[in-house]
Image (cartoon, rainbow, N blue to C red; front, side):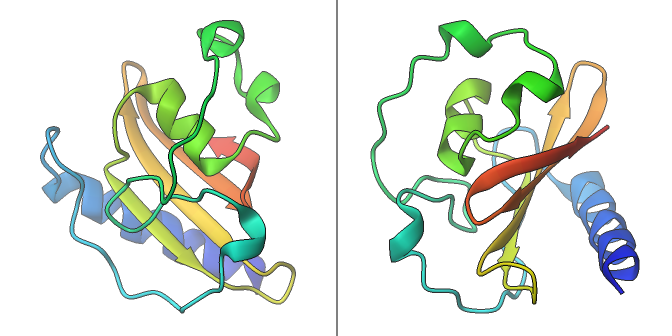
Length: 124
């Protein structure tokens, strides 16, 4: 079930990226409302953080994906310095908040997968 959801998410993000302009995020997709107060600052569908955060990106610049695991949604946005092309959030049976963010990076597309506001995996 999770594999089908992941594949569907990847296809949707890929299609959204094809039509997205580099200067602004793609149109928001329908999502399941999720209470986010217990997660702190999170990224909304426009790609902006819901609160201002303080984050020193220096130690993480140029690091591989494994070094980024555990960072929050807003920390990843701060690290990139721009809003993602696409953001999808909802709930799953395994967590209260699932978020997927798509970025175009120098080496191609990167999909950041979050669970309860913590980065779990990066798919390139």
